[in-house]
Image 1 (cartoon, rainbow, N blue to C red):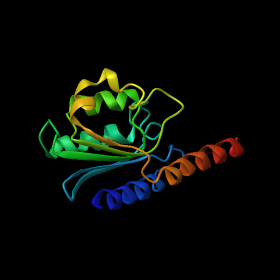
Image 2 (cartoon, rainbow, N blue to C red):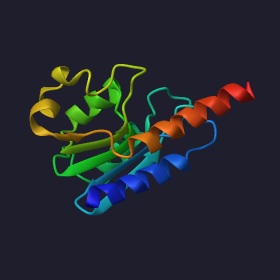
Image 3 (cartoon, helix red, strand yellow):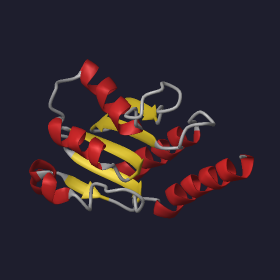
Length: 147
């Protein structure tokens, strides 16, 4: 299935994150064409809202239409409530994510707040969940050990 190949690429993108950034990767595609990729940049850019999804969507709408119902986003961590609101606003068509976000309110927990996403968007979570989860655990373990 195509989305698993793109998802593997999102994992590679996350692995390429700067060493001080939480390794989250996001890929936006229209059909089989990848139109943007991003990692978290909250530390690098000094902006707490520069999540991978946010940057990938901003880049995607620069070259495409404002509404993205024909687009898919592949992200290694379940979108937080902020990114979920953004995905609602741009009318994303499909959301595929890896690890579930148990630390903060996230998409699946808050879906009732986003009627467009709830009623119109294919949402599939848990893709390569263990790989995505382990990447995050390893990052935070290393961060704690380096302190």
